[in-house]
Image (cartoon, rainbow, N blue to C red; front, top):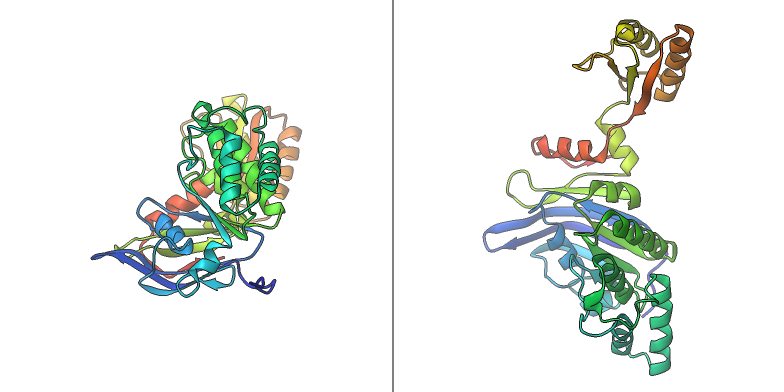
Length: 333
């Protein structure tokens, strides 16, 4: 089976529809993922993220529309799709009774590798995912992070063109999540395309080249309501802001005047008697320039600064804003 042309999208979805009885799950999803990238798929529970992944992995059939993975139609050529993908779900799917090494060798043999080749591949993956010291231990003795790394390693016994990661860090502690993130980055550096569904917005911010937000605002099925790079999505929400905290509450008024002059608009003051916030609109000067100007004037005025920071919208704010909005056409930035 020849590989698809290099400019073929790794994932291409058009008007994809799926219902479970009278309940729509997907209401016309359009999505394109470039090869060798990470696409973060965000959305609230019930938006259809897992349903979309199951269709792309040929575990479920769509009711309408088309989907192609690695150049192959998921309905017409499911065997070709399955030969090109790997799926890691929310829970580790390895055998907990046997060791990590035995799990990897077993899966390698299922891929029809001979004994010596299966052992070599298992050893490579154990080293790559930092599991050599625990290789002989039963998987039931592994921590959550170790199990997830082993699950990811199993999916790479034969490196796939596309890997689906469905909430892969659910239940992991911060250190284990960080380790899994680095494993995903290494996977992409080797040429694999990753579709990542996650409830952790910082995870998408750290890993994704582009993000698609899936939402079902009116009960007609999930669809992509916004798409772009993390920076583009955050920039589309609004401008930057400067947060200033002075050491002496008596200097807040003078500091507010300086910020207003530097930014060309009036700042806001809240309950904190030492804090001032300046929201920069889309037509304002770059935040870094305003910040530098304000800092010079504050120093010249002898105002002691406890904290001064340039703040941009977060993905959390983008997500909440999209969830609050009424149904509208897809937004692509």
